[in-house]
Length: 143
Image (cartoon, rainbow, N blue to C red; front, side, top):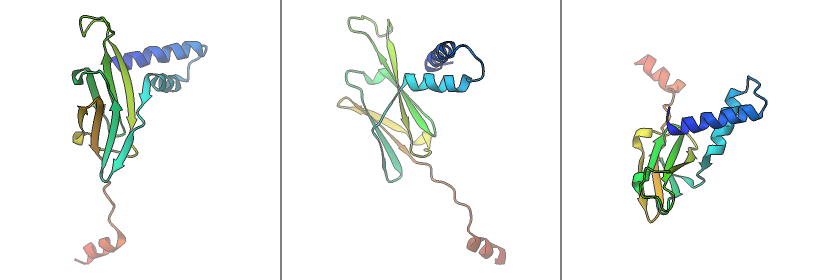
């Protein structure tokens, strides 16, 4: 279980407890916890076969950013070290951001870079496989 899943599970349990500890709404508690923990990235744009996402990451080194790309979304984890801390490991806080795609994407095509305090993520949209038309089916049968 990764850090985000642990935080989500803890928050979902808190929501469950606040709701009276009645069983049966586990999934809605989990979704509520995710919604509270994942800040939405709103700068998601389509350009041809590509989707571009921009997120301000001022004062965050590229090494403190982790990106998980899935077919329907991406999660950006940004480790923040409190000021005055000597080590990057001591007391760091991780913020999570969510970018949802307008359609499915090909995770293997994802690339990201940081320039001038902006993280840019680019990913290619999935191209749906179309079913053969009746006209092409007739052509194949007569061949």
